[in-house]
Image (cartoon, rainbow, N blue to C red; front, side, top):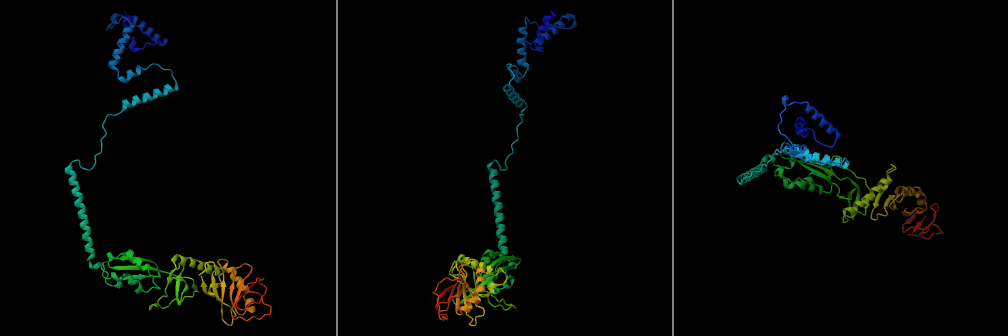
Length: 407
């Protein structure tokens, strides 16, 4: 009887399988039941005719007391252990744990600042318009107040301070501000005044600023001339960028007027574009820098430089020891300026002795120079050399009247 009683609840304690360990546990529990009597307080609740009936009843109880997830886990068939099955079981366990641990609390959603009702929206729009109108009215009122306030008005030209001018007169600079006398300082267009100042030939850069309450300050940077320029019968100045400058006016307050010592440049036409003039002045600067590279200031001996042909820079120098005082025209080409000048300097006494009426020397060739005489030159040698004949530099050939001689 005890064996039959314990056989009814053994399946709920130990899962019946085909393993030998489970069968040993079952026999041990049944043996313990045989030692129990009815007087020891063990009541028979329900009697099952067979072990199969007990298992069937256990399935019904599990469906009622256990959650669905547990039933699904019990319903899984036994699988062989493989790496694929292990990864799949891990994924399924993770999904079931996520479903079990997921919170069902609602996440609060932040609401916008715009009102939801139409009345609230109209009220908000009206408030924005009123605010904008107030700001605009305040700006207009402040503008009118500043415009008519006498404290910010430029009374005279004395309220305009000018710095940095040495060649441009104050009257020339003040001509740009002629319409600003009596105007409110806040309504003077600074960009336009700066452009007007920089349009003056001598002004390279200008700065214009307001100084409250009623002053203007102007600072200018003037251009630096590098040569005289001849345009017909007029002589002016030119800077390194090819900008033509008029001769500066004499200033009454200038105690030490500036005296320029430049060669006169030809070949700079005012009708040429500024880019063309700038390119030719770049050649001029390279030519002067090359001659003065030794520190002897050779450029001071040049009286005129012709830049009309960029491939042949020509310079006029006074021949030393020439009693007549006539000038010599030298052709330097477009390179090796200092070396060609050294060649001219070393042979000049010999050429002067042989050709007193020498007027032009072409130094552009490597192994020869071309000497040109005045048209009224007299031939002092019976043996004449045809014009253009090439000879070593150490020889002294005779020349024809008015023609060049190659040496």
